[in-house]
Length: 112
Image (tube, rainbow, N blue to C red; front, side, top):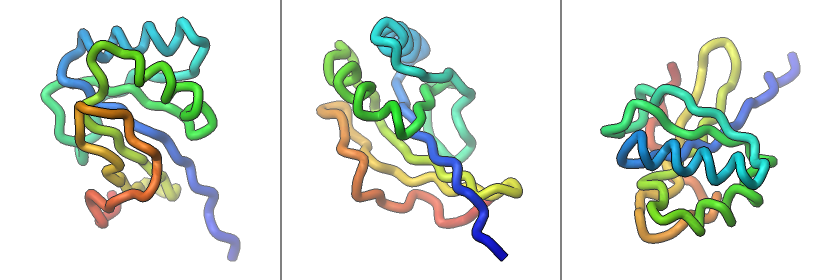
C-alpha cells in the first residue's frame, strides 16, 4: 500500500494578536501566501492565532520575518499524515532570530 502524502506547514507563534496581524500585513505586502489559524492545541501561546505558511513560501517569508520589529517567539513545523494524524515539531523558540528550518526537534511524538 502506498504511503500517504504528507501535508507540511510552518507555524509562526507571536506574543500577541497585534504582532500576528503586523506579520500578516508584512507577508501579504510582499505577496507571500499565509493563513491565520487558531493556535494548535500542541503549541503553547498566549495568543489565540498563529500564522501558517507553506514550505514553498518559506524562503520569501524568511526575509520578511527578519525585517519585522517583533519577530516570532517560536516556529514550528506541522506535518499532517492524513486520517487525523499530525506531528508538530519545534524548530525554534527564540525572539532573537529567525530560525533555519532544519534540523527539527520533536515537540510531541504523539499523533492526534
